[in-house]
Length: 315
Image (cartoon, rainbow, N blue to C red; front, side, top):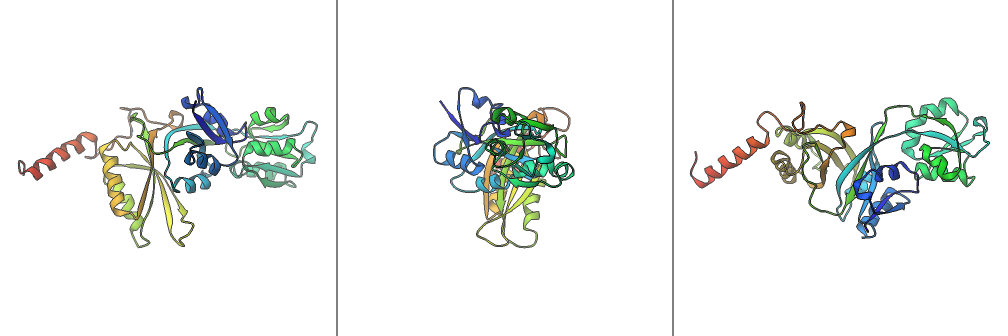
């Protein structure tokens, strides 16, 4: 039986996400106290894979996860799942909203309900917790008055929902990823994502050079974020998401070019995009296939021509 670690405790958004993965069928689901602990369990061989939140449509990337993925030993993403995020304010049975003086939530939960809390609970202190489910558990233990968490957490911890659907942005979505030790990527689906991180020399135009390697090959860059390198002042990891798969010639050539150009490149996986996130099916209008001479057939023809030039059979 495989073991899948996830950000716990039970009733987190991450548990909801991991249960949507086909890998969860028949697997032992192991809650971890933090995303860092979940990824550490994979590195230590205590879990076969870990499901962790990676990016939120409102707040961007999850810093602890971005930082952990560039640590050693390497890990790779093999699948993603997008989950619509719905928050509720919950308290112990019988509690009234005007009695709430402390509210706990995960930092991303707080960020996505900040305006609602300010408008509806202006006198309450908002405290950070390791997860939304842990915030609900804190309420059940009497440590705080209320929590902002997934509605499922209320039933799990015997709480009462005082207000539902309190997110500032109703359409918020969180992307969760399944992470394993290095392994061959899943086969291309025609609607794929490649994730990587790179560092460059601190000089004018260095980042532009990285972006150019992608642009000239028709690679669609869909996300870029920077994270400081902890022991090097003014040095950063640039985290990139691109449409396409490492098995495709354009993407493979771009990664090789970045490996030549950058100080360090960390390949973090190629995997199918979750259709709920607007994944483009193969052959559809506006798909991920590069254009303007960068399609797979053009790369294959160019490679054959170059082989002929090197062999002296073509000019």
